[in-house]
Length: 91
Image (cartoon, rainbow, N blue to C red):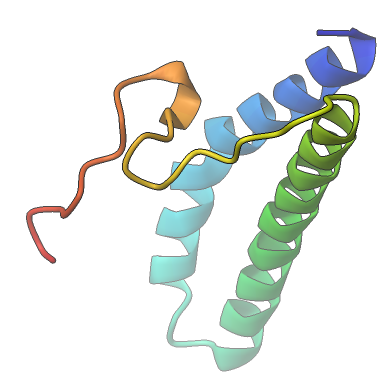
């Protein structure tokens, strides 16, 4: 991990910090289509930018390895935690 990785993870942490508040605000402004669309657009752009930055970094890390094995969804470790469940309670 380098300084760039730390800044990237700080960016994700900051986005996570306000995600619930932004989601609640969107729920409350649904009656104003323009405000709702603007909020959705802003949130979507922030999520997209963070996701793109993360994936760009992963591609850089993968390119530095000779043989890269991409884990399947069943064995992937989300947030360095337990493997992702095969199916959730709703699906």
